[in-house]
Amino acid sequence: MNLYIQSKKSYKVKHPVCTRNVLKSAFVSLVLLANVATAHRSSALDLATFTETATIPQLHQKMKTGELSSEALVRFYLDRIAAIDDSGPMLNTVVQLNANALAQAKAFDQRLKSGGLVGAMHGIPVLLKDNIDTTDGMANTAGSLALANNFPKQEAFLVTQLKKAGAIILGKANLSEWANFRSDKASSGWTSLYGQTKNPYDLTRNPCGSSAGSGAAIAANLATVAVGTETDGSITCPSAVNGVVGIKPTIGTVSRQGIIPIAFSQDTAGPMARNVVNAQIALAAMTGFDRQDPAPVKIDDKTQTFAKNSSQGKRIGVLRQLSGYHRDVDQLFEEAIKQLEAQGAVIVDDLAFDEGVSWGAQEYDVLLYEFKDGINHYLKGTAQGLPKSLAELIEFNNKHSDKTMPYFDQEIFISAQEKGDLTSEAYLTARKHAKEMSQAKGIDKLLETHQLDVLIAPTTGPAWKTDLVNGDNFSGSASSPAAVAGYPHITVPMGYVSGLPVGLSLFGAKLAEPVLIDVAYAYEQATLHRKPPKFTGR
Image (cartoon, rainbow, N blue to C red):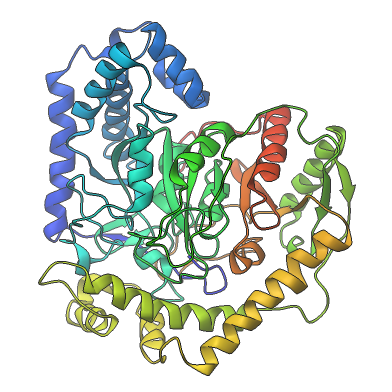
């Protein structure tokens, strides 16, 4: 998603994919019928309560003592998906399921008995945004009818990394179609394949995007961790408005291979979880140097200690330039500043980028150029019978417009198609300007001038009413500086406005994830803002 463009949309259609939706429901029903006395029901452990706040190490400890198994955890989540996602509130977040998830969980349980934990994600159910390649029998669709039958032959590098650490890919999560890069009138969380995802805190409100399903599913406790992707705001916005933790890492630390692209200079995957510990563990598992990535960044040390006093002595800059668009959010932000100060942080207040520092128009131009190049390259590697270029995608949407464009058009696609290649002087100039403004003259200058560790701002406003006619209604956002710079950005729950969650954003220099995680964890533990959703608004 790109908050500058403000584009995203989803709607539920049943085309060939309806078959997959039916199979998904049938799979869950068979599992439940065949296992009436499931492990999680017979156990003394209340998984609904325990998993809401449990860290991955706590889950592993229960597995080691025999109070929990990976199989029971997977069954528990399949049960919740059937009860909450496919029935009841009908959140519409999980759109495909891995038919081998239970078998994989059983294998991990046997391995635990014979040889211990495979890795830091041993037996942990993970949802992938439906723009990430996996070879678990699930299509990678970007929510588009055009890619309904796109079954990758190779999985994304980040998926391989997760599996090496022991993760179980439970299923695919809905998104904003084409990661919200098709129209500037889109509704976040809407796809022509799967329909509209709902916000679990108020079903009439929007989950934000483009990682809409990932954020809403984790908020509703439908998996331990989800993976989202971001170009500008697509992890941080849905994390904030769904009351979860989201980490957009430094560009290149998580491989972009196997992800349906928007723009390689800003795209990244990142974890979404109900607590900082789980998000960090998933992030460490996902990262890795991949020569297939266009510009890989190596991390030598992935260790992270978690201490409740880790904000002590940190110099935190308050970027008020990115606030002021919502009175109630501003009040919560003031409280967050006081809480950080009470934890021993040194607050440097009332900061702003220098006059004339801007990059919005140039960023949009860069995204158009890089999208055309990136999507053409991705489509060339797909199976026969699928569109092979952006031009063919545009043609497909026109041919099937009753299903693909019932609410919004494809003007961003058309604008991208009109661009030249990546040797264009216009592209090179725009990219250089955007990077210079966001990095050297933006974030880097503030950090260096004031000797700061972290910059903070409200992530975005509370969720708006879903509106398929007019599209999204953003009040403000802190995502762009770190997104354009390619620097890390974390959002953590900051409180509630009329029952709707909002987030606190922390961002900083390249590879500053450890210090951002330190402060995010200390703030999270001191405030414990997060509360489970109540699925109101039915």
